[in-house]
Length: 258
Image (cartoon, rainbow, N blue to C red; front, top):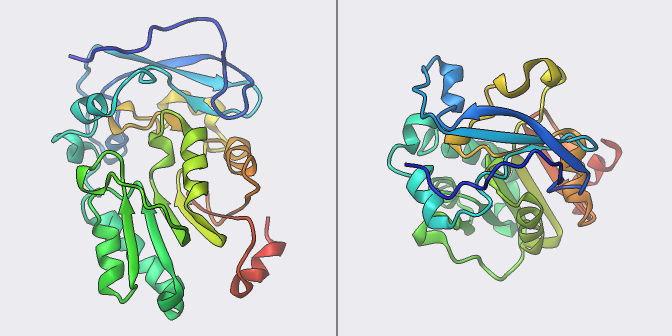
């Protein structure tokens, strides 16, 4: 039983990123998940989840869960069944991400303080610590062991497959900003709406409320969310991004890349 969903309104709402008008865009079943891309058939829940899309920055989101507590998210999304819709969550993705970070920053690991924002089960940071990174800390408000956010600043804040889960993405980006040192970097992943999104719509595999994918960024929306805090963005693909304010000298060559 899914309770306390925010009532649907047909009136436009202020976009959660740019405050532009966000109209109702479409509806999917609560059980729609990203695992359908692997051929997993959806069993309908009968619970409709409406998404809105901003007419200005094209940010796509649902406000259905805006009134939920962390306990409700844990009960209905991040529960014992979650791994069925995200089988890579526990070890495959964090280990692959740790290998990539170790490859890119391994030579500087003694100087790199790493915070994994939304890091889940600490597998990513554990792999970095094993690789010789002296400081690799996990923060995740959905996981009891890692619910305390560190007060210090970090040279590298990672945020893998997290932004799309935030019911208040502007507040989430602001919280990430608070963790970044002056010459620190934010390395994060979230898929951007593809060029053909207007044709695919909510049929796109990445729209999945059962996965907790409730905030789906366009490129302008992502730039706006970080730009409000003075960040520039480098996107290496539609999924892998780097945000910075003042680049450290060893990455100054990225200044010319937009």
